[in-house]
Length: 242
Image 1 (cartoon, rainbow, N blue to C red):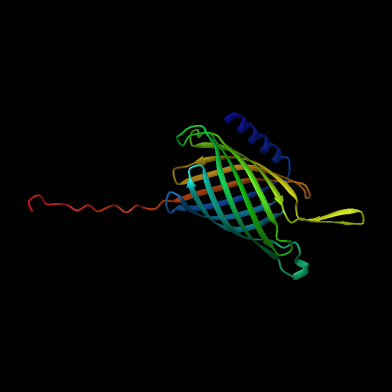
Image 2: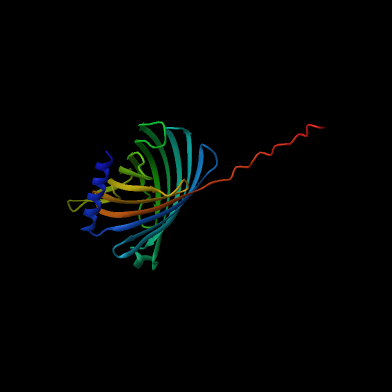
């Protein structure tokens, strides 16, 4: 299984080298409040062949009531070049997004941390942009992860997007549609753990969009978990002579 996933990743990267691809980079910092609650801050930068395409910041609260069940609430703010600069004489455009997700682990091969995993995530997302309708999107993702080998793990993901409020109408016998109706995203990445607190990710993603041109990009990510120092319990010394 590990060799098959690695071969698939190499094929995707070879395909991307023959096409114009973008670069998505992320840096995330997280901290655990307890065994169930975790907060995460994420910084993102995106580039396409023409240069900078998007920057943003995301705040996520994770809640895991059970080992195989978890929830996540995320707010993301982004800035990107304004494609309609002639209308309002602004070089930048901004977006706001809120996403609520529920994740379920379907399969775990072993009880320890070094295991094969399969998880499924469903999410509803609402995004507000300046020049587009506020899209309400349903996202469903299936993720497969191999057991860790020499601090390396391979991940593959398939995600489906469905827009609830895409607008359709006929004009001069031609169907006009604003907003995507469906989208598929295929990705694979290598996860490298430097230590318990730091991790790097390198991968590739391909977007199959029905109404717009398909796109692909490389992913580079860094994750750091901020460990809180536990307060040492002070023991009272008892003098046996007293």
